[in-house]
Length: 143
Image 1 (cartoon, one colour):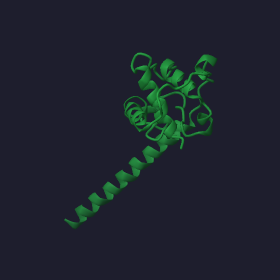
Image 2 (cartoon, rainbow, N blue to C red; image 1 turned 90 degrees about the vertical axis):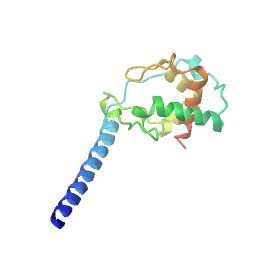
Image 3 (cartoon, helix red, strand yellow; image 1 turned 120 degrees about the vertical axis):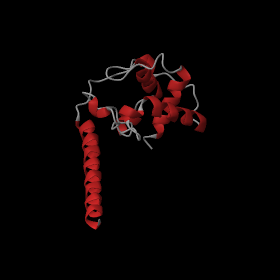
Image 4 (tube, rainbow, N blue to C red; image 1 turned 45 degrees about the vertical axis):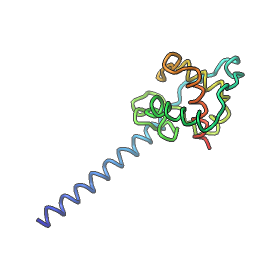
């Protein structure tokens, strides 16, 4: 009986190690992919001002929407390492990079609204206020 218990424990440890290695390789693979082509927003979008105040309520709302609509590709902490990122041909946007912080709220809102393959458009899926709340939330991922 002790031998069986020992074998089961060793198999469980080995399974955990394999799962961890698969997770790490998935994250590394997602980030090692090529970046997509440049995605400049039009000047009209760059100059848009966010009408939704970045407060605890909009950030909470934005987080719920992010979890439902964005997390699977962009990941829990916005690094572009979500569970579906490995299935894409290009790397997902990493919201924690300094280059991201330079984007205006209007640029981010426009990209969420318009989308581009492989990212879907959220023009009809989320309201204007919801998209602005997502912008408010993803800004917190860079801090």
